[in-house]
Length: 145
Image (tube, rainbow, N blue to C red):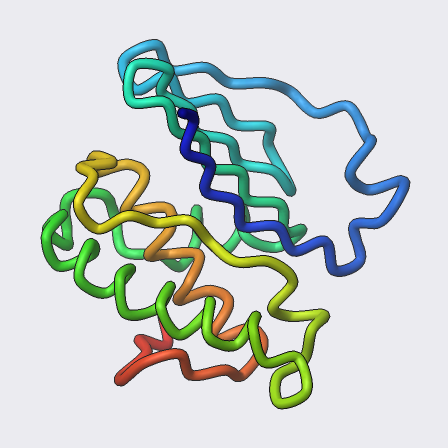
């Protein structure tokens, strides 16, 4: 069974922005594939998971404002991701209360699976980026980096 974690936000990235050809970067250690600018994809066939983040401003924000890799521990990010994603999924199920354009689909994140540092790092930072960019608070204190 393939577990897929999708974070898809396509604000302003409708037809032309997402279809533009971008350079592809591959890191064989983590099997990370990044399309620069608006799409980040992480896949690991041995664990059978995939993370796709499509958001026009996230790559720039990640490079310029996020904590550097190694600054936060994996366990810290896993705990925060669990809380953020639980609230995210609750909001997806309540489109009458929360903007369905912001919370389009649920995120399948199993806290019992070790997704590794890189996946947790990108999900954590996307959640911080999302909350700061769209003035949302999913859970507790949100760093304003």
